[in-house]
Image 1 (spheres, rainbow, N blue to C red):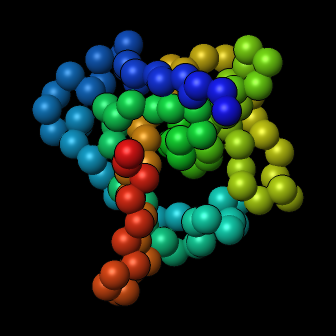
Image 2 (cartoon, rainbow, N blue to C red):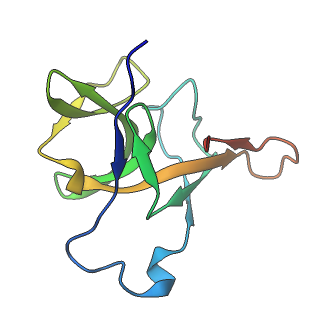
Image 3 (cartoon, rainbow, N blue to C red):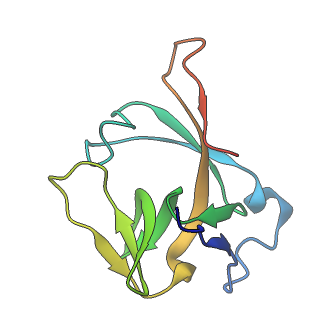
Length: 119
């Protein structure tokens, strides 16, 4: 098994300098690009100053929109990888596109459906 890269997410634009903007936030999953792990309507909790590892689920800003994908590294390139094979990988120029790491998911209204993604 190969060692996984660990990346500290840093935001050069200074947007996260304010304390409130560095707080975790929740998003609802839309669409089917992250099936089977993440279904439409599930809620993900994102840590904007988290530590991203290869294989982590991230929110990134790519081609003018925020996108939820798995972060992978292939042959010196970083990719935003959908779990649903009906969608294509999206290469990114650098890790500056990553805006947060998914730390948890839960199905709304279902107690005990919480899953953590923090090691």
